[in-house]
Length: 224
Image 1: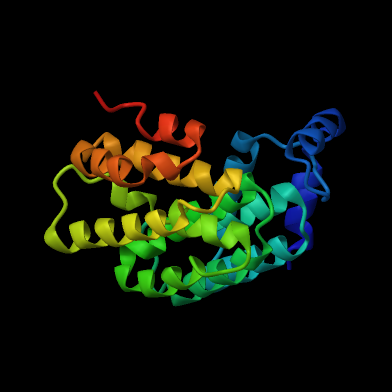
Image 2 (image 1 turned 90 degrees about the vertical axis):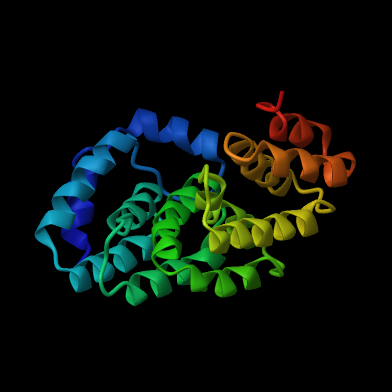
């Protein structure tokens, strides 16, 4: 099913840009050289023309190609606030997590996953399992996919409990010296500091000395 959609992408290929992207991302896969706006325009058109079942099938087909832009397009096909039923989309996004090997693809897939978590926060139980994975990108994804819980200025009690739960995951990851894990912790805290400076400052008091200096500085960027 996905072949004709790949043809749409290949028609926009830019070999020079593709070469630059391959050098930048450093992951060994095919790059076509499409820009994000180009992918957005394609997936917007596809979404409007396809049923949910067909979108799920197309997303999986594009993902399995391992082409950089195709994987981004797969994620964008599922980045939607309202989706009913959405169990198929959530299961598909979860199935992609073990394949993560670059921040850009992982972040796009996590953006799609964020909508599904907000639709059913009970899925955090499944995400918590990611924090114990041997796969660094899976551990990182647990923090990236939960970024919506940094953003409420006046969270309800249940969302406040979820915020504290995820901060607990971040604290467990502090001893992990991998740059991407430290960056993800800093990202979560930096975003949280815009809406809950008290909790951010408390986390840094308790764990900041154990974080890498760049991550500690990034986490506290917006604190007074």
